[in-house]
Length: 149
Image (cartoon, rainbow, N blue to C red; front, side):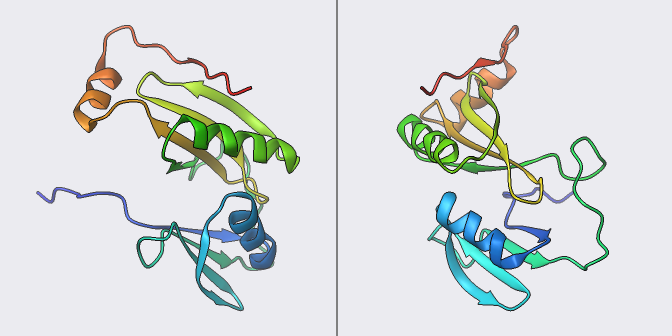
């Protein structure tokens, strides 16, 4: 049986490539790797692309929370301070924050892009993946609100 190494890049269809590109670069800090009329390939700065935005067809249904399909995707930041900076940037740009959560092994901020795609930005609270996995599996672990103000 195959053993996946990691999840690679994500490609999402959007209603307006230009508007989504602006959101992902100016608000969330992604960098443009390649821009085309119907697609933008974005990078966090280390590999060819981490996220691609493709123009959806005009008759595509809109994204609705709770439907079958993608619930959200997650983007890791370096530390708590970086997550707090993102949180304040979202507020300053009038982007609704759905929730902030302390999962025990991560601290997270959840929100949506202009098309309603769910996004989580998070930081790892442990030094090693093994410590994070142990916390994830810890009996009685419960999520709490992450305070970023």
